[in-house]
Length: 445
Image (cartoon, rainbow, N blue to C red; front, top):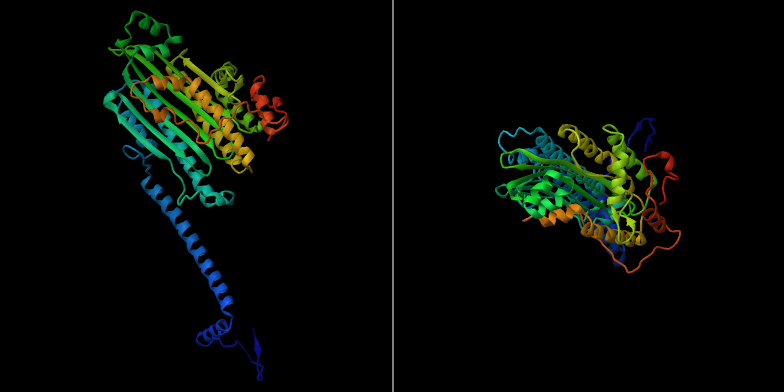
């Protein structure tokens, strides 16, 4: 405020003296009624606590982020996990000295680096949801810091077993996620051989003559499952693995690759189905135009709940016992499929995790999770194989099971609902999701 004086000079008024102003405020405050003074004090205290709490929350997150950035360490049982490069060397250290099998080395690098990338991306999504995304702020579930993966390092190399199992559960974006890398090198037993011999004549011969105990097995694989919190975001699963069966002199009796990826929506968004299938088709077509239709059909048949006559989800690709051609060429195909996982799924997870949902959607999610559990325990070959391995880490085998599961007797959704639409897709004829022309709408949700 400017003040004009009689001499026409313009001057600024003197600054208020705090020693005078403060007593005036105190006097005014004391003139209020006791009840009003209490109300003002309570409001001032609440504002102060909120500011301190917000400051503490941000400081805690920054500390957690800084700790991860500088230490790059995840803790669970066993020794600490320090990321992909560390894991790669950890597994290589258990291979035979001067291992000349490039495919083994390349497979270990693929599995460990992909695992590390998934851990980092899901950790980052949880941090972002915890700090930046207002949609999640009302439901921090008592988390004082953003949720991180628990990483268990299983080092039993004296028994031919190495594994790194990373699990996140109870987050804001992720209800449960697991990504595990395993390497086994041990003698083959008849029970394991029977599980694997179906498409390998040489292995069948050893099984028939009772000479299986003279064989050894080496396998390296990665398996991943993500069950999101939001029912609008689909569950995803993938795994890729490489087997070699050798005699005592090191000569190879049989080798093969297996794997695949599939999507299990709780609520169907057709554009998501198209996105995933089109990227998988692109990876397959790069190597063989017959791969996608063949492996897509295999997935439709494999991920099928026979007793309930419904598919587990909208499929993807699935293959096993793939050994036609050179190991190098088939590994290249497997790597391209594995590299498709992140661009095919994370954009969907990010987008659908911010969709609105309520109690009805969560109940339906629990029921669909129940179907998922039924399939994994009754039909899944990987689960059956895991149970057949002596001394297996059973927690790693069952990490694919979701946290919230529901089972209801003869439950059927109401006709015409979004839940009913999904069930009709799952009980109907498999669709060609990769072809744009087959997409009749962007979403059924």
